[in-house]
Length: 476
Ligand SMILES: *Cc1c(COP(=O)(O)O)cnc(C)c1O
Image (cartoon, rainbow, N blue to C red; front, side, top):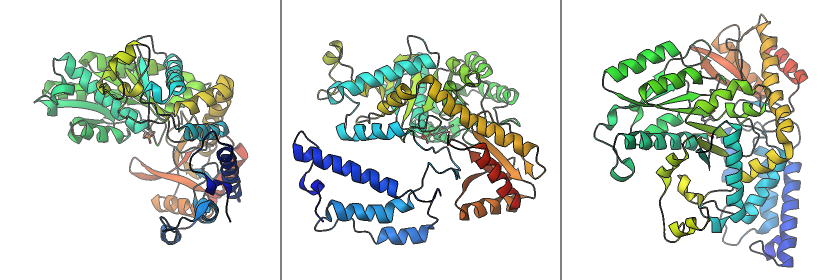
């Protein structure tokens, strides 16, 4: 069957194009809605069965399938096997359902296809990103010299932080890495992170030419926060042995436990050694809009902050930002190209954001944050994030009173790591049993033991649902 969509190429001012666009959007929305059937997070197909289905799909036929055949196949063979983040039975990762208005944002982003590298590729997009960044700087307590940029995710934010701090640290010692590459004693440089920090710091150390060996893993205490006493000893010993400490990364919301490092004390240690202090708040940053914002208010003490909007903020992937207290540090990424971001334009008020980012062509992700912040406001977001944190606290209080469970770390955010009594195998099997019933939960390790994990980002999850899960777990 021929569709209006088959008669057009790109969205444009023409009537035919507008009609085709409308029908494509409506049919797509209907296909998505049609694929939501049973509340389960996943169809249950294993990798071999799913691969068989995908292998059999045509991809680049000699004669195109046309809109209707292509969409029918997407609807029947792909969408049913997508993971449904909105399911109340999905809680293994920091992977959220999305606010409905941000799906509209994605449609706008794709339709206009703005790019953030130069003002002439996204005039309103550039101005909105600057506005959103300024709002974030004030939300996190940063002053007038601060600046920031949107990135593709927490990993890129962390890696960018590592690069700019490396550059600035060495520049202060008279060494221009941007121009000359690393100094001869580069393998003495040290970055300190918690042993349960995100692996993007290792990745970053490699990319930055410092290597994994430059990343020193600080031990954590029983609450999964950097053990300050041990950290001080390690850093002091390194300095005495001739290593060059240049950066500490605090984790504000560890990926598994949601634990929050003691930024105040880490700030003092960083100052003592002339180090930069970065805060990886990819997970915990959302708490700033909750009633529990005091748990993350020390973020303002850090020299840079990683924020992920695609976690607690419920914004579609990808959307992340790096905020930097001394905004000039972002000059690490500044270069000028005659065809793109001429210096003379910038003198006339055109802002070319390419100079603050590792990326060149870049998505207008800031629109999603703008639309969600504006529509929900502080009150709306507070309710949503309070629900996540409240659900984790409720689940923790239920299982800490329950003989069948072990729950070693009190949650500060929305994750709870726990175990059923009876050993590793019981826990592994419990996760598999739940998965076969369509409930996907997480699994990790705490002090050498297999643990289960709930990551409660879904704001429509209720106490009744949690009660149901507890009784289901007890029976495994
Ligand atoms: C998720 C996460 C990251 C990585 O972020 P991506 O957006 O997945 O690249 C980094 N740090 C922490 C603490 C995280 O939870």
